[in-house]
Length: 128
Image 1: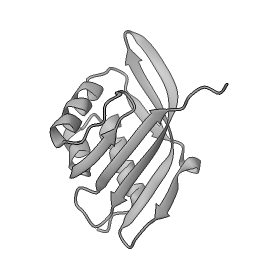
Image 2: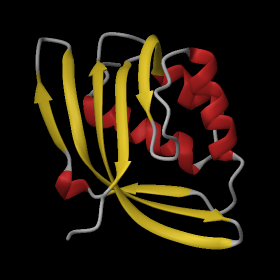
Image 3: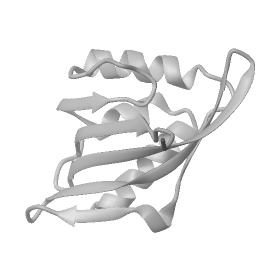
Image 4: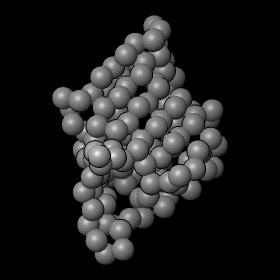
């Protein structure tokens, strides 16, 4: 079955929501870079990405939902696309349930079994 950029995004969200570490890690290419929502570090190795998701998935009441109307897919070649949009995170940290929106950008190559080449996610800052 042919992968689609939105299908890859859905698989990523399912990995978070179902706390399936293996499913998440299989999405990231060996050369992938992750600029994650919950870290100030640039992660550019499979081991760093794994450690990040292990910590994240250990959080209670964790979920992410994409605002479908915000998703934009920009095709940059026959197989590479940039997928961006906004998702809503719910996460319990220090016994407090937080809800906040974050913006994301993923560069994916739909022909690869590990399609995520780059992923950036950051909390949307408050307006001045």
